[in-house]
Length: 297
Ligand SMILES: [Zn+2]
Image (cartoon, rainbow, N blue to C red; front, side):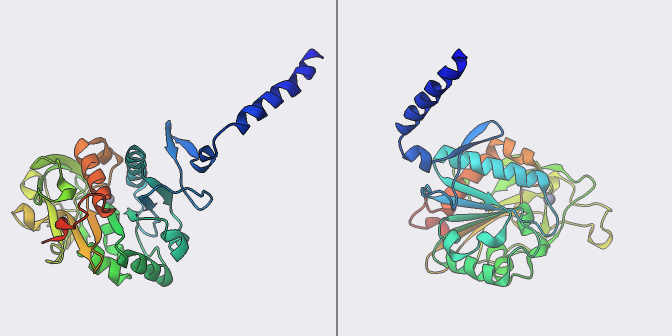
């Protein structure tokens, strides 16, 4: 019986302590993701930190389950560290004018297939033309986006052919070809990485700035898996086989970066990939290089 009398007292104490919480605590909700406390943003919260990153990973073609999870977590952790807002979704409905206006950068995290409707593609292009940034990761650069001319030609700029499959994952030397570019700040001149190495029909056009290329002598771009397209060599020089490139578009110098790395979640366990990721987000959001020096070719 004594316990029953005590309960209302405990309840009242809890209520009064809640009343003294600052309102901001309500506006900055946090959730725990794989043991990490992270700040969330979204339409239901009034406070959205700036810059804010939309991480979009809808797949209507090949699904990189591990690459998506790895990049999502790495970007969320980087954003949290830097005090930026972020929001992950696989629903293309977010590509409407009201919601997209909340973000400074859109990351297409292994998006594959025809994910956006023609109207959503137009909304994105309008948002992008205002000077907002875009980041494309690995599968977002495969051959499944050719329905969307603007994306395929102006943001990606190269046509995927294939990747080795025997073995699928190989260690290769990546050479930094744009050492003075903000996306490569702090990087060594080259580094070794394990990934599923993409080959493209040709390097992107001169409209793009090649930031890193692949040394084909350090892995096997030949295999017998794909018949006629088994020879996946692009050329002996690292500049023949670009693997990371960037571009600035339009009067507002909207920035776009593509990296073909990122099939495996383990990519984000390397300091090189994490540094490139942070540099990329900061450059795309114009936090670094506000004078757009990195836009010069
Ligand atoms: Zn892949």
